[in-house]
Amino acid sequence: MDFEFDEDQRLLREMVRETVERSRSLPPEQLWKTYLDLGWLETPPVELAIVLDELGYVADPTPFLATATWFAPLAGRLPAGSGTGVCDGTGRFVLDAGRADEVALLTGSGVVVVSGAEVAAEPVAVFDPTLHVAHVEAADLVAGVPDLTLMGLAITAVGACRRILDLAVAHVKRREQFGVPIGSFQAVKHKAADMHVAIERARALAYYSALTIAEDDPRRREAALMAKASAGECQRVVFKHGYQLFGAMGYTWENDLQIYLKRAKACDLLLGTASVHRRALLEEHARKGAAR
Picture 1 (tube, rainbow, N blue to C red):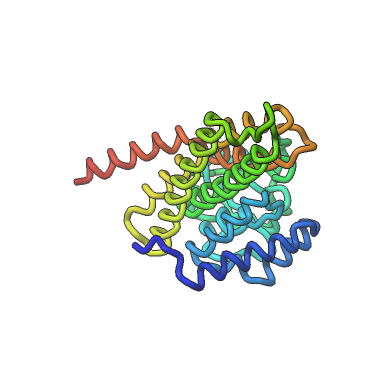
Picture 2 (cartoon, helix red, strand yellow):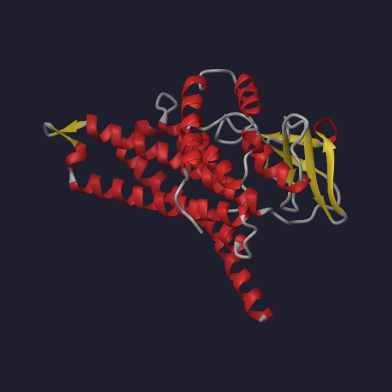
């Protein structure tokens, strides 16, 4: 597998960055229309990961993540408008269930797609005010989280963690103690280095997951579980160090850091934390070993 972006993928990354930077002040409805017009929902897995990486970096408030990675892999198509999927067998904490035009339900008899108006969705208040999460009431739900769904959450968390690191580095270059920037202190450098290593590790695994999905590689399930687990572990390191480097003001609503801390944490909690997917990975290895 080639882990380097080709020229088209690099151009896509730059285009997404420029578009998001130019339009980030728009209301979510206009942002969503911009993404639809640009055809980002139609990108294959690796290119989709590039888009989600950049949208995670800005804590995107649109239903893009749910539509592209919760609805599409279940339904096998894009929705008429926005969409989401219920795939964990519980219907708890479903991303964008309260505002989706279509909802894909994974049931014992297969995937059932219904309009959002037909779904009994109860909005849930969460610590990330830009996320829309709801509990869904439906019969005969079964668990079967798609690999693309796990990859989407993982790379979105990575994007948010990249932003946290960039904000922290900029802060420690400006903030002074004893007449020098605190970024010159060895302990601060070590924390920033730990954040960088955690991000690069999680990012590599998230893109590896996207590659295995794109190539329908038999390792795709293991790769998705590793990506989600690594992203969860990454956000713990980045959350702790980023928050500490900013001090208490980093978690205030006046500081932008809290937006990305919350988005990274939410991506870890949705559909199971790192420990859940580490355990699932062990079970997957045991299952394959028993089948040999």
